[in-house]
Length: 215
Image (cartoon, rainbow, N blue to C red; front, side, top):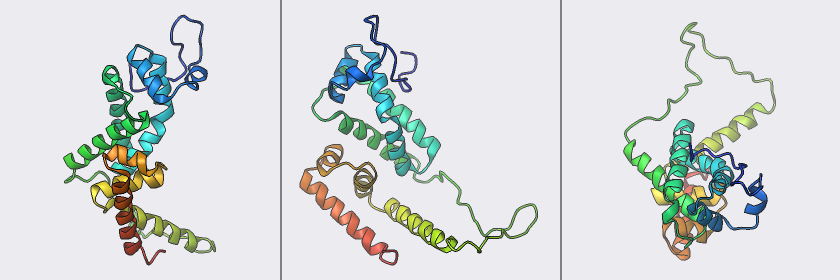
């Protein structure tokens, strides 16, 4: 296919008269669809890209904190899926294999760019560069303070999640934001279910301690 990283998900798989992949795909597991991709079913690949593309971008964004980088890494994830199609073995759930690829790419990116800044911090209280005046903040809305406190709390949570050790951070992101269970997370991180529970327990214990003023 021309661009295996960005399939449409609704193309015909051939000349058999089937115009939509989804109804047939609904009868098979993702692993079975991926095995069909290995046999040349490009519509199956498009279906999997469409199904997982947004959630992989969201996961990667929380890992790298940069939208453009997350999108580039997501493209690379699905390119690797396509390139690995013939060697794919349905030994685990397809989503587990997919998140393992995404996790490895995100970790490698973080290590390669650990000394680089991926985004500049916006100083809301800095004077305007042209006029030299300070920005005015409206205070007549009774919900402004509540909204600011909520935003402050969310930013504090994001900052403390980013500060967690690498494996703890990945486990929390998969558990909290991707709603993956202990077994799935363990499969991605190559840990037992009990080790995954222990890892998450330590991570959440650390977060509760560091964020106790917001709880």
